[in-house]
Image (cartoon, rainbow, N blue to C red):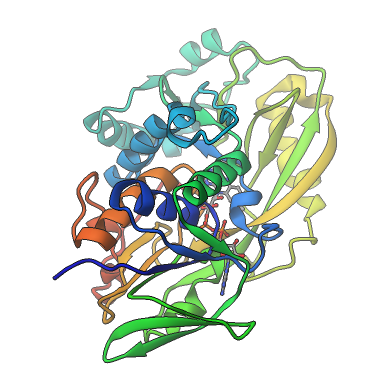
Length: 389
Ligand SMILES: Cc1cc2nc3c(=O)[nH]c(=O)nc-3n(C[C@H](O)[C@H](O)[C@H](O)COP(=O)(O)OP(=O)(O)OC[C@H]3O[C@@H](n4cnc5c(N)ncnc54)[C@H](O)[C@@H]3O)c2cc1C
């Protein structure tokens, strides 16, 4: 069977834009990307902390981040159109900290990570103290420090670079809201938009982030993906922390350098409501939960000042907190890439490339993403990731 010739991608965030780029680069397919809000006001890709790590518990997540990191390291040669592409990639590592209760998990994860070629050092409190003199290690049993290939970058620049290059290769980004996916005899043949336009296609990709579920429901498939708000706080401090990685406290509070200051966050308090307004920053979360833990972990953070805060939605997969990538069960020419639950920015290049292969040729070539197939929902086989921030 020959591959599709007209692909519509619904959603022009990092997943949709990366998929459109690889469809064009590797398969000569010029997708139409429907994006209802080209200003990306509520899109996760514009509100991300954009950090990348190899410290996952699932091999597929480690491999996705490794492949994406390679891409990000050479992003200028991949995506340059006119001006150089600079995403400010820095690689100071992630540092997971554990008390007595969590140490065994760090040991288990490190074995999986080592098998996948990740370089992670398990450090005792004494070793932690020697390496990070600013860190209070009193209540710690162990730390796991990524020695290579972990850090952060500017996610919005990544999104724009994918978009520009995909466009230069012939993809069309249209400012339209996809409303109805037209299906006949188990195959999609077009997408109707809010403005009355109808775009014919012989393959569709649902990459609508936290808003993917209603679209998949039109194909008779229930995606357990919801918009879950996460707050990020920006603070200034006179403290200077040498070689500071992204630190994850045993409490779940995390922080990392950003520009001249730091950003930080924590799991939400109370009910994790679907679609909570992004304007409702929970400032009490910082005052009551984050700040006391920051000051305990890094005594130099006693003096700090919150200077900004923002919120964004995790496109949260409530089934097993991992990406859902692949063919939509029951619909041969419909595909999905969503539900990344806080780790999509670091997976987008590898997901986009592999998904483009599946769409164009019917099989994965660069990386087998079968473990992320939505089929696991039908079979009730969760792919549990224990390292979710
Ligand atoms: C606070 C925060 C911190 C994060 N930190 C990290 C991190 O450190 N590392 C990491 O890897 N990831 C992180 N993430 C997650 C990452 O940002 C997301 O996984 C990723 O951006 C998802 O990209 P996407 O393209 O799937 O979704 P989005 O960027 O949300 O894009 C989906 C797009 O679809 C559009 N759309 C929706 N419905 C329709 C429709 N019907 N028609 C047309 N268009 C439509 C939307 O307007 C949107 O632009 C974080 C996320 C948040 C919110």
